[in-house]
Length: 81
Image (cartoon, rainbow, N blue to C red; front, side, top):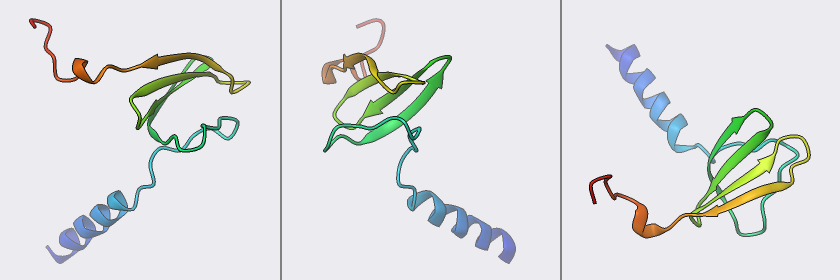
């Protein structure tokens, strides 16, 4: 039981020390922009930023392919609204 408790505490500490998602090395964000989530597909990388944008980058060149601005009013809305 003690080992289980120690494991749980270690996992919690590791989780709270997380600095956020790790970007591929060839991608850079503008000053003041922070990544909230990163996902990768075939030839692209999508970065969700803390300022409610999705930036789609080319996976090889790192160039921005597309930028999607998220509307705060859209969050929490259901399909029936």
